[in-house]
Length: 475
Ligand code: AMP
Ligand code: ZN
Image 1: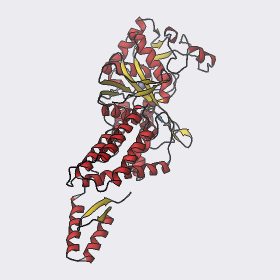
Image 2: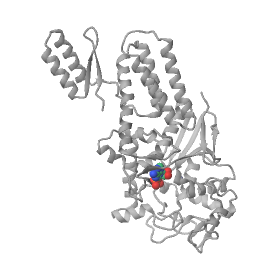
Image 3: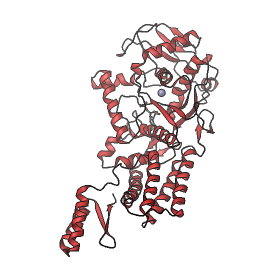
Image 4: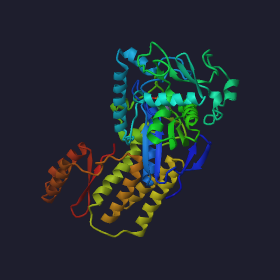
């Protein structure tokens, strides 16, 4: 296995990856706030985590992946003011917050399945983990990291000497540029709410400090600890999660345990549209469903969102999506032909073929191990496509070996349709009928069948000895 390296937002360096427990990787990903349909920008971040997880599994690790669902506490402003996004949606849509959450959880899961994301091992919901959050806040108060004012609880950032170590937003830096609204309850303007009292909030729970609801950041600290332990390997999110969300998560979790919490922090840069971050608040968004309704294939949408390096902004365009469709078609077509060739006789495997396969799979793994360098990894895939297409005379054994390589690579990419190589029975029946028509010199019927097949999206290529090969028509 080649070495795996990731850029760690914490150290700002590319580091060798080694999990805490040999052979096992624990990953926590910040999931959706379920107040509207997720957009393709959200999915760029979720897909980064999916590709990361799939690649680690490709390398033989057992992965435990947790992705939370935020269904309370995420306010419209990062500075502890503004409405709870979920409650705002509930009021607007005249529904219960629980109904809103369920509706958009379903939407998120449908879109995830469409884009072939491997389901996380668990999707914990904030509203179902209030007990764990309260326990954590109590410990923070006991340890002097948090204080109570009335029925609110705040984290005292001055008590955590490493505040700012992830984002670079140290207290000195923040104070210098202080623009934050002064909340007279807070000891320091950067202190953040762990528990909030608001009589108008719809979702409320009993706590030692009165009825209220949790802050957004405490949710991820509490749920990650519950399912992954006090220390784990990788935490992912989009770049806007770095501050304040992840900075505050570190202060909370390490404030409780006094241990280093997460070893590697991976953040996806934004998906942009028309030069701006795609976001729910700006409304400049596309959902997966909208793109599918426009006629784009789900495999192409997935490919477009994973094909550029996750640490570079991805500028979404329809031309880019069309190019993604062609790229997916090229790979699918190649695999389609290989699946037919796999039935051929012949057990010989030429050295040249075995070498080409080895070089492609190794090159792919090495590129992915280089901080998930997807463009370089894809270059190896297309080299393999070119080589496989050149090997039209491959033996059955060679075709099967090539197929295995594509399937292994696709365990990471996740873009091949599972039935890519299966020719529907009616198509094979027509192709056979045409062969018989040609044998009995019924050229008119043979031509008619060829046209029928073309209309159904398949092309017949004649081979020597009245044999034929069926190709899918390019999309
Ligand atoms: P939210 O549903 O707003 O909590 O966001 C869910 C995830 O999507 C978070 O990890 C965000 O950082 C991420 N995200 C939001 N907008 C974008 C974008 N335009 N590009 C990439 N990731 C994004
Ligand atoms: Zn989070």
